[in-house]
Length: 299
Image 1 (cartoon, rainbow, N blue to C red):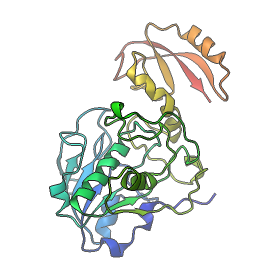
Image 2 (cartoon, one colour; image 1 turned 60 degrees about the horizontal axis):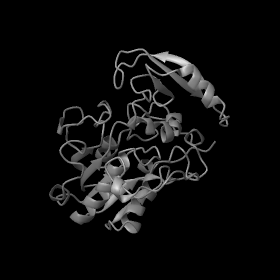
Image 3 (cartoon, one colour; image 1 turned 90 degrees about the vertical axis):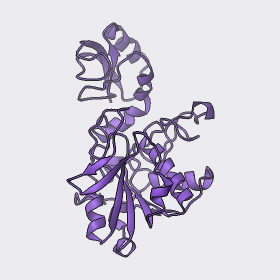
């Protein structure tokens, strides 16, 4: 297996040295040697003026939907501006003081994952500020071939549905940034540091790369596969498994007849999937500290 080379690993020192830079990154913005983007930029002589953090914060510890505050980070010695608090977009007046903005967040390939909304506003704000946006590309973990689900209708647009794209859109973050810029008309100077060795047919376990959970409830790359469907349960009174060690792999509620539900779902004969009865007690989210009867599936 040939290892895919990440965009962060193809970032050239000559671009970075002596430049005033803003970063959009989090705890998963590492290269294959586990050197963080902040460390890489400083090693190359860049002046990091501000770090913009997405949902879950710079260290990925805030719960889904929890507002994150801006602050000064003593570990990295940098100002951290939250893009999941009072504002969702990098302020243009701040961006105008920079030479360029660098975006490096691992996506999961699903429309309602909010990092691509942060990408949308990064493209928009950098365009308005008149500075380049450099996107360090990362693989789409659920491959770049399969496209599924309806295109978002404008009337349902929100931060968990920022653009008219399918649920599973089959693009890398670099390709999506270009799509936002050119097709959706956000404009700007979007520069993508492309992957090397990535093919559209690759799933994440084909890349040779280590998986760093990009958010608290995507602990494994396989979670991204089931998240495509079971995250839809968030809008119901069923638990989607948040508050367990296997989020999105289980579904249910205290009042559900999981044995019957499992039996009915197995009658569908879904390829590679088997449903079974389990019990769990969430440590946060829906049905906190209550025993939940659920069914789970194994592929």
